[in-house]
Figure 1 (cartoon, rainbow, N blue to C red):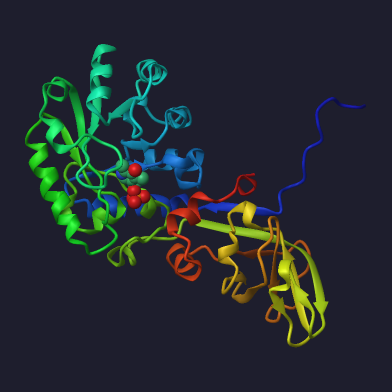
Figure 2 (cartoon, helix red, strand yellow):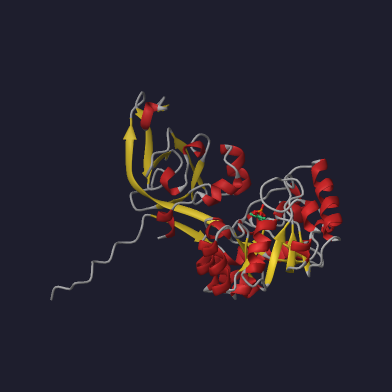
Length: 351
Ligand SMILES: *Cc1c(COP(=O)(O)O)cnc(C)c1O
């Protein structure tokens, strides 16, 4: 009998696998490194591309109870898994619709200016967080504004600031730390928060009451101190679409960037820059078929990339190979930052 239901699509030819145990282990390691402070989790940008649906429940079950997003539009997906009161919205409140939504959901605004503080109080106020800008000059009140009556009269849970250079050995780290300490003395608040992933690696002086790791939860290593403690979380694999044998002198891909010096067996793989495997990742990148390396040849296309099968000659269409996704290594190899490697992971990988 004909059915009105659309036919079910065949399984995708590329996949992202998130190792939630590695994610949890990373959170536990960062929580321990935070000393007496509690680690929260930055889950903005769909948990850095790895998926709110997968990451937030795992972090919650591990004991995480503070979640940081950038946009109000990100609150709903997180709220399905954790209480709204545990979600902080870093972009603050810039219009009446956002204030109304904050009130309606109970997600907590991070107030970034005197104007936002006044608007929040005028709307009835209530528990909030406050960002103070100690030098990154992005979002937040200036330290001098924090002691003002408009701020003092707020119900501040977390007073926070953000480091500009935590992934470097910069004198700016200590300067920001000192300024944050001084500023924190000028206003009542329940908890203080300063360190992102790299900030946690700077030591417990930077940890205060709540830390806000993002990158390192997802397998990023922003400082060498974290290298042995952080496990890889994301695995990207794709299927081979076609295998071909080419002659010496034949070229591969757009703009003929690779030319074979000898006869070669090559494979076209179902992963391209639209999936986050950016063009910058092509030169020098090596896919793995089990323990057999398959180097990328020529330009990465939108939906495909071609690899050398010299060491994996038996592979056939439908076989899967793994894209290089060790973040520190891939970042060095491509000059794309570890943050961008994660957050550009494309939607087709998420099924
Ligand atoms: C993104 C963000 C974090 C997390 O930073 P990572 O470097 O990914 O650990 C923490 N705090 C603020 C304010 C952020 O915007």
